[in-house]
Length: 114
Length: 112
Image 1 (cartoon, rainbow over the protein chains, first blue to last red):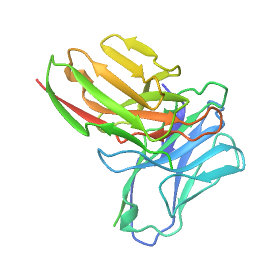
Image 2 (cartoon, rainbow over the protein chains, first blue to last red):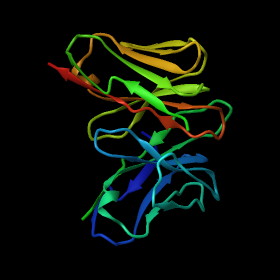
Image 3 (cartoon, chains in turn purple, brown):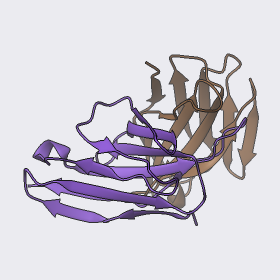
């Protein structure tokens, strides 16, 4: 079982609230990712990081922001949640190397903004 | 930007029938990975293909990487109810710091 954890698993929050979704991994992976996925749909990359102090925007524009101050921690923040942000957010990590390795996913955070 | 499409989007098969999903990239890939996501779960890595024309097997699953390294396929022989889920391909244009882009996915439903 992969050592990557997301909290909370489920979150229901009111419009306009600030939220932070936590993601931590204990595998020492340099690469970390955030994907947004609506139920039964494709995964959209919204943020990724190659290591500490490195963050990049993904393919899908997102109003969220991320930070990577420590290797093991890659939190995602929404300053002002809206109903359009309702979705599942999946965090993943992988090693960096000449030959890419698999991405390990967390259990996900299912966010509902009311 | 890089686009990775999969067909079909949905597939319903009778238990015991075969199933195939196809993955097509708009750009040449350095490698292709396949993941399975069970309903309500998170994607789990199945396999990685690196070489042009590579074929790998895992029991009833056969994975193929195209000669041009722009397409791939996953074939399941004699499907079982445990095969239910969404199958995603994922690729990178280069090794190292290239981001991992997932395909659009194929959702497989098994009719008992």
